Amino acid sequence: MLRPSFIGSFPRADVLLDPPLPEVAFVGRSNVGKSTLLNALVGRRIAKTSGTPGKTRALNVFLIDESHYFLDLPGYGYARVGKAQRGAFRGLVKHTLRRDRLQGVVWLLDIRHPLSAEDQAMQDALAEEEKTRVLAALTKGDKLSPGKRSTRERELRDELGLPDDQVVVTSAKTGEGIADLKEAIAGLISGVTQ
Image (cartoon, rainbow, N blue to C red; front, top):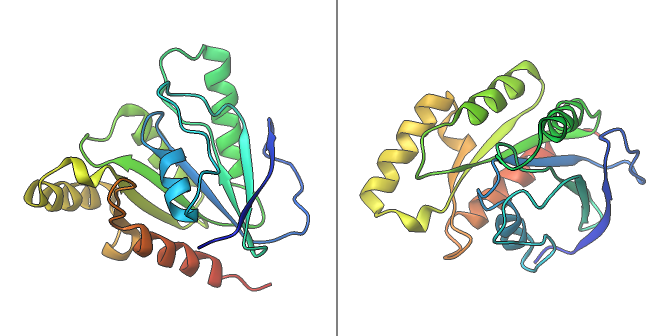
């Protein structure tokens, strides 16, 4: 079990974290299950889950095992958020992707749905930051039959252009893929030279 502690919630991405440690950012559409997945990864409730999408409004930072940070970004694509707030979210994501200590991004996508326009915009943003390694966590895997799930995984992997080891089907409800995702995140972090 990981030992997490909440560091703070920041409106801007240029916050200096002390001590300087490797960082992994979590991004995804509103209602993709980001808070639920974060909680499953650390084995306890650190991120607030809600029936109302779009609750995360700032960069939430968690120190994990005194060795690295998880950066929880606001969900994108939520219709009830105003234009100015959407622009602020985009800026927050863009600047987070440029952080010096960022070792990779866990990009959450609901396995049941095709890529939305917002997902494609995120894909473009991630592609622009060539140094940023991406893991795609396909959430809500328990909601599909095994056959449909493997078909959707293959379709999304092809659409995203990611290799097998960068796509993990997960279910926070059943625990499927959580250990694999932890291992993949550890791989992102271990690629760091201190």
